[in-house]
Image (cartoon, rainbow, N blue to C red; front, side, top):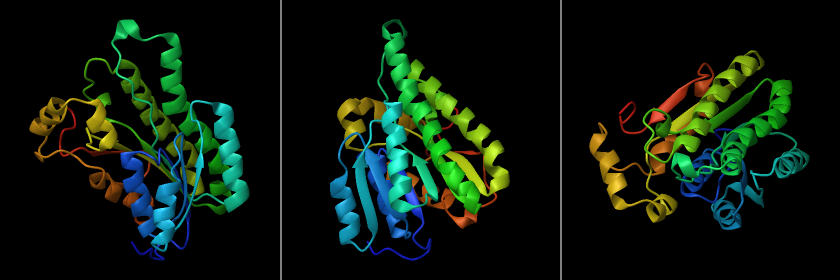
Length: 250
């Protein structure tokens, strides 16, 4: 990977960078010339090192998105060290499968804290700087489960529908300041984490009902992210881009 200067070193913050989608997103943004700040609960220094070795710029730090105080410390650290944030990608998610009867109030709050509150806090922290410079991109990750949730996903699907509401509301509030806010809604995507936690039949069921009959992989989503983070998407905001092989609504 050789980083281009297409985006003139714009700073992109990416959460959930240690996961399968996070890696694909990081490599695509780095290849476009973004200076990356990678974060996750798990260390992502190896990914940052790969990007640096290939001519890009990346730093990595851990952050527990389930702890609002940790999120606030992370945001302050980023602004202090980089001086600016141009692109925020709220990719991290907490996705436990649990039947309705077994969802405790504590689990519900934990899912909402990671999936909704953390993106809100990060958007709040970084948008002030974006507003001053009248340019910014916020990209949230929704989920196809909001359109056709399987059993056991009531809390997760609710959190992702809340992400869509947050996306629309932020787009309305920030659009006049040169900031676009959009969401990407993936289908079931195969990566090491999902392959380890889901049965093979789940991927086959989803694949069979898509218009493009193959299993989605992380690289299928990275182009959508690159577009929404770019100048080409300057008049696109408040939208949910379904990148799911045509499985939307099934």
